[in-house]
Every structure is written in C-alpha cells, then in structure tokens.
Length: 102
Image 1 (cartoon, rainbow, N blue to C red):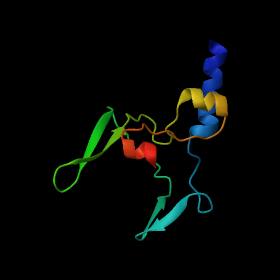
Image 2 (cartoon, one colour):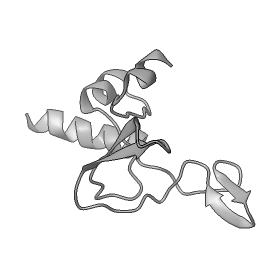
Image 3 (cartoon, one colour):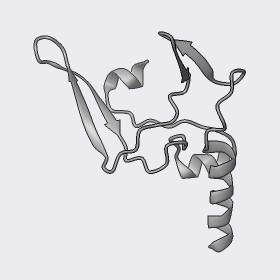
C-alpha cells in the first residue's frame, strides 16, 4: 500500500501540478493584465458546492460543481485515470445533459 501511495504522490506532483508560469508556456496579456491562460493560481476553497445558472426567465440552464481546493497549483484530476494514463489530465464532473451531448 505504501508503494501505491508513493507512486500516486509522485504522479500528482509530476503531472498535475502547474509548473512555474512563463511567457512561452502560459502567461498571456488580457485586458492589460498578465494572467495564466490556465487560470492558475486557483482561488482556495474550504468547501465543495454546486452553482446553478439560470436564464432571464429563471429556468435552470446549467449546474457547475465547484470542488474544495487546498492547493492553488493543482490541476483537477481523477486518481484512477492519473495512475493509468500517467500524464496530465483535467477532470470535471458532468452536471447536465448538454455537457454529455457536446
């Protein structure tokens, strides 16, 4: 079990941690500000929550899952995928039929 945990930690740090932002890799100028094109660093959040988006008539359009975040440089991932693929992945929860279709 210890070797599995060590392997997982090594994979997370090698593949899922956002590297130092550089001009060549991810720094971009948007509206006069230099930002990371991947949105790092991510704002820390203590709790997970769902955010509902409605149209002007108050009909539900979409639901987003916003997970708790305790590391502002870590990409969202699924441990089983990471250990199988052994490369960078990005995971988001499917929360609507529209997301499945497109």
